[in-house]
Amino acid sequence: MKARVTALAALSIATGCVTAPNIDPPASAPSQWLGESAPRSGAAIDAWWRDGVSDPALIDLIDRAGAINSIAEAEARYLEARARVAAARGSLLPSITANGEASRTDLADAPAYDVEQASLGVGLDLDIFGASRNRLRAAGATANERDALLRLARIEARRTAADLYIALRSAQAQRAAAAAGEHAAAESFALSDSRYSAGLESGLSPAQARAARDAARARLPQFAQAETEARLALEALLGLEPGALSQALAAAQPIPDIRTDQMLSAPADVLAHHPDIAAAEARLARAGFTAAAARADLWPRVSLEAALLSVSAPSGFSGALSDGDQTQSAIALTAPLFNFGRLRALARAENYAAEAEAAQLRQAVLDRLADVETQRARLANARARVDAQAQARASARDAATLAQARYRSGLTSFLDVLTADRTLYDADAALAVAEAERAQAAIALAAALGLGQSPS
Image 1: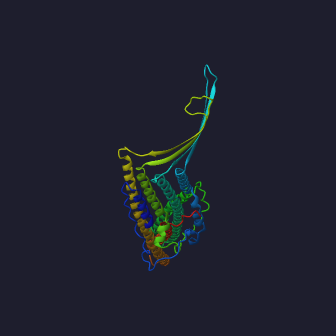
Image 2 (image 1 turned 120 degrees about the vertical axis):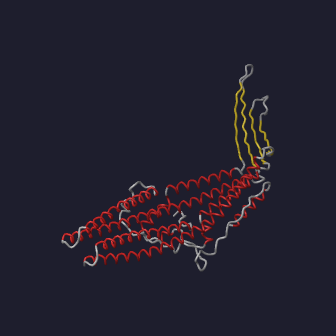
Image 3 (image 1 turned 90 degrees about the vertical axis):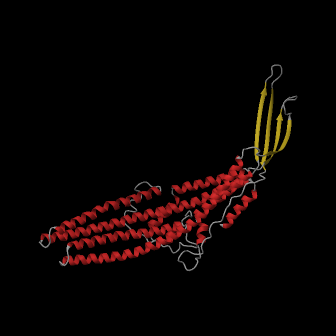
């Protein structure tokens, strides 16, 4: 990466006339990630979901997300940029023009006559100071940026599809927990009501059980709405009509645990292959070449021109050209003399633009490293939270079972049963949220590492 920045600086100095951009190289990549005892070796698996996910539905959705409308738009932008490269390349080649003209003249005291003229011209801009060549390189850098943005669009599309799928499964899991809570509250209500009918309980216990049942039932619509919103957003992302995935995703499935052992590679490898860094490097290259072209515009432009003319005219024609073939050639020199500093100001502006892009590249490198470390920490904390929440759920289930048994034996109040049941429901819902966070953290880590950018 430093070599690329140095090359841009050298190119800027070579054209002279205006001070070259002050381009400092970005920070070097660390030898290893935080907390690791030794550097990593080997490349990461770009299609991480193929072997890292056990849920076939999620694998299929991530695959399909690689060809959605946003990807098609980014691909069209890339092809547009490639076409503009071809157009810029044409400015370095000779231009050939052909012209033809025919006229008829009627005279009052002489017979009418025809004059036919044809010409074939060739022109070539010698581009001595490299203005056209640098604009061609700038167009190529734009194409490289669009290619990086296309790869970045694939990563974002696949990440979004996976996130929406996890959100849908999380809503289903929380809805199932709420339904289980409603069922437990309904059973508690039936038990307390029977004990009340037998004179073993006051009327307060059935009322409390009924309130707990109704409260659990009231939570169901919000999770159903969250599931619907996630499914509709997923269908829109994939270019499907609303409801297209309703049957395929109707049955609740466990939230997948995504493997990350094949995701992480060395920091230098991440910086070398992440499209976000590639796009920043391409923008810097474009700015450097554009600045060089602007400085070249301060110097004269030299071009060669040649033409072959053929004239067919009657004998004695008095036009500027006589009958027959003629050739013409010329060297044209165009130099900016008085433009009130406009070209020099444009050159300085392009220099500053290159310096700004260099600063953005340096910041992009730091942001990329920080993002990976952030997602690594997020994933580690999410895994710890899942483990702790699973233990809390097991404890809550034991407490709920014990409270039911003690209540049936008359050793505790019904309020203890309701409290234990509510704690168990909260633990079920919290575990679903923690598992979703763990899966989404793994997905975010893959995106931070630049994985998922290949077409398939």
